[in-house]
Structures are given as C-alpha cells and as structure tokens.
Image 1 (cartoon, helix red, strand yellow):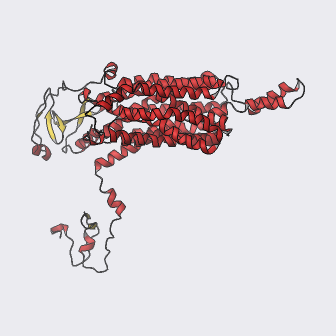
Image 2 (cartoon, rainbow, N blue to C red):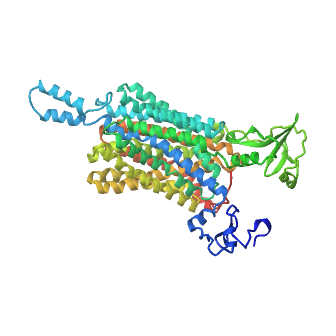
Image 3 (spheres, one colour):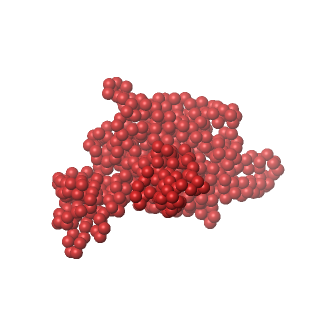
Length: 589
C-alpha cells in the first residue's frame, strides 16, 4: 500500500492526475484506480503481452536496435541508387538487331533497305551514343568508370573517415550521391547524347559513394561486439540485396516509359536518407554518455567538450563557470578526473554523484596515451588483411558482374523485356540474403571465417557453369539456379566485407586501438572494388564472343578467390586453439 501523499484516499475516487506505477509481479499499473472504494470506478486492463515484451528491453538495447535499423536503411539506399544502370542497359540499346533482321526479311530493292533500316533505328534502337555495334564496350566503360573511381576513392575514404565525424561525412556523401544519380536521369529529360557526360557523372558518383561503406561498418561495429558478429552482420548485410531488389523494382517500373525516372527517384531517396542520417545517426555509445553527462551537469554551470577522440568522439570535460573562475574536469562514469598524463580521481563517487563540486583551477593536458589513427601500411601489417583483400577482389568481381550484367543476359538468353528481366534478376539477390546470413551463422558456430568462405567459393564455381547451361531450358530451372548462385556467390562476399573486416579492424595486435576499423574496412573493400571494376568491363568485352566466355571468366575468378584463402584455411584447421566465436565474451567498443 502506498503511504502518505502518494496514496489516494480510500473513501472516494482519487485524482486521475496521480502518477501510475508499473507492478511487474501483477502485470498491472498501480495507482488511483485500484485504491478507490468506488465500485463503479474504472479498473485497468492487463497490459498486452506484446507491450510487456517491449518493456523487457533496456535503453541501451533500444538504441542498439535503432542504430542497426538506421544503418541498414542508409546503405540500402546506396545500393538502391547503383542498380538502375543495369536495368536501363537493355533500354539504352534496344532491338537494333531485330530492326536489321526485319529490314533484310522485307526484301525489296537496295534503295528500300537504307530507308527501312533508318526508320527502325529511329523508332526502336538505342539511345545515342549506344546505338552502334560496340554498345557492349560503351556500356562496360560506364560501369568501369563508376567502379574504378569507387575503388580508388575507397582507399582514401577510410583514411579520411577516421579523422572526421562519421555522421557529417556520411551525410555529405549521400546528398552528393543523390545529386549525381539524378543528373544521370536528367540526361534523358534534356536529351543529352554525350558519352563524356554520362561517364563524368558515373566517375563523380563513384567517388562520393565511397563515403558509405567504411562509415556504416565502423558505426555498426561500435555498437555490436564480437559475440555473434557473423550472425548480426550477416542479417545486417542483407541491405545490399534489399537495395538491389528495390532498385530493380523502382527502375523497372519506369524503364520502358521514361528511363530517366529510373535514376531520379532513387537519387531523391538516397538524398532524403542523407537528411535522416544527419538528424538521427548515433556514431558511438559514448556519444550518449556525453549527452547524458551534459544534461546532468549542475544547475547554473555550463558543460563543454574538448579533445577530439575516435571518429570525432570526445572525452567529456565539464567547464564550470562561476564569475571569472573556470574549472575543467574530466567526467566519466559519474567520477570527475583531472586530465593529464595519468588520470587521478578528483572526487569520490558519492561526492561526484551528489553534484557538490568544489571549484578549483585544473589544467587540462591531452593524454599522451590517446591512440592515433592507424597508417595505411600499419593496417596492411594486420594478419589476414592482405589475404582477405585479394580474395575479395575476385569474389566481388563475380558479384558485381552479376549486378551489372545479369538483367541484360536474361534479356538475351530468355528473350524477356527489360522489366521482366529486371524483376527476375532480383532472385539472385534473394539468394544472396540467405547466403550471407548462412555464412555468418556457420562461421560463428565453427569460429572459422576463412574456411566458411572457401567452401562456398568451391561450390560456387560449378554452380555458375550449371547456371549457364540450365538457363537455356526455361524459366523454372533459371529461377532455381539464380537462388543457388546468389547464395554461394554473395555469401563469401558478404562475410568478408562485414564480420571479417570488423574482426580485423579490432584485431588483438592493435592493442585496443579502435581507430583502425574504418581504414581496414576501406582497404579490404577498396581492393575488392578493383575486381568489381574489372569484372563488368571484362564481361562487356568477352560477351561479344558469346556469353560462355563470360561464365568461364567468372569460374576462374572464383577459384582464384579460393586460392588466396588457402593459407588462412590451413591455419584455421590446424590451430588447436580454434573455438566458436559465439563463446567469446562480448566486447563493447
């Protein structure tokens, strides 16, 4: 029974303004309603089980889930804006061969043939300058311009990202990416036929999109420790496939009527998500501690921060002003410290918690032990970075060749229009979602990242050959093989770019220096992006001699990716200390 002023009178209805309190044992709110003697008074209904479930999560878990969802949506928008070019390719060069065949079949004199060919070229053929016989090379050059700029920019992006606030860096990148994606679509609206225009836009877009991956991987790794990292990041990395699927559906809905909108709509979406990033992204759990420390500072005193830390994160210093006297103290876990070469508590926990802080002059000196951002060569010396980087080069070559050329291949092999081919190509990404999650779960269970990747790469090569054969026998077999290929191709790619990158970025050789994560992520993904640039370019060249040559190239790349992992696989299999990563104590960053 509540006593004193907290207890409503039992002789009559209590005020409804009384605060209610949750009773965990009874699953009821306690307060005025059940204490009144009025038989006609309202009795509170039990709280629904779903709401009770939501209340089982603490504030930190809610922030963690929010960051997971937000970063998932942010990078979904990146891939959503990259996908339209692969859907629009079949529209940029459309039915030219059919027009030529129709002109030949129509017979007639030599004087009639040029006129008929010209008529169909104007009506049915491609968007200039992609109306020539070398259209595959031109389309491949557009892919290469984007991906080569992305690969070069990625090496710089990680180094820059370590030294700037992630939220601002990512916001600027997303706004610029939205601008350049829309510019490509405006080429249709303003009837632009200059190859230099489209290549320049692709180069610029490739550079600004490098802000995305190191930023979101660093952010999600700050919030999630090593426990079950493969599973968490396997689920989280499905944003790649979700973005590809949404990009295909959005671009496909406009491609036949106005392909410019296939770029403009995704461009607007990624720019809008950039605004959301600026408003809501929390880079690190320590940022919340800083905010709470500022809000809980004593009345009449102002709090400020000083000395930039990791990725713009700041140690908390309270600057108390009273008259002309200023005091600088380091605030951490409700204890005030003097900041110097060695930190010593200025106050006991009880005194600090009470808010009775004596004013005294304190000189603030930056700690000598504060870690600095790792160098490029220092990141390369981390064990496993070079092997996984080179493996990803070839694994990403295969994945991005499918990303940029699969819709066009389905159009030619299955004789479908651009929209249906784009919709069917999304099954490859659906398989990729399953493959990424499966790779994460298996590697967590076994504690062997390299071995998991190697097995999937070994199975992917013959599956690619099977897809090239079976896709000619109808829609049903094609659907099944797309799902299997997507899982085996994207599984290793997803695992290396997420869980492996996060593991290496927090490797024990770094001795707790968390400022290597963005650089390591950028090196691994940047090297992979070189393969992503080369793959579509080779596909454009080799497809002129038949699609079989493209698939032979993809199978060779898969075997090379496997080859670079063999040393790490041998080390994992022979190590007597190998154990499931899921048993490792959760490490908070």
